[in-house]
Length: 127
Image (cartoon, rainbow, N blue to C red; front, side, top):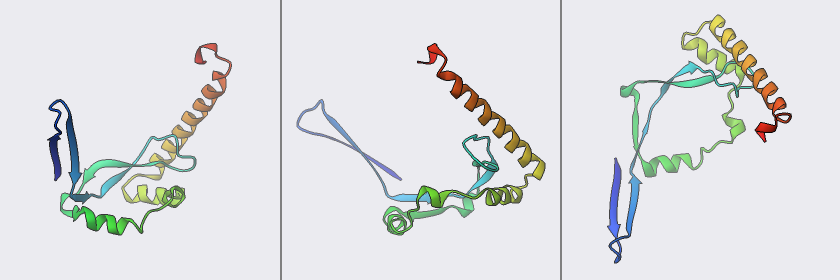
């Protein structure tokens, strides 16, 4: 639950708000074939809206933070190789054809963005 408390100092017009948290809820969402063109190689993976309420874990904030303090990872460690992303999507029920089609579409989007970016320097309105 979120604890919301308000307190007033001696000045009645000043209002201090504080919000605190005491429980972390951890959910596992389904993975979807995304349309994010920032992926440089292979299929982009995103999170869907579906999750299993019975697999949701609730843990108090202090316990969660004590585990997380040693588990922080760098951006490089968080990157998922393209082969692994493809296997994830196949496990979610996507076909090789759907994945390949999305990868082609994303490549086209990236190419168009690059062309637009390079044309911007010649466009006086963009400045």
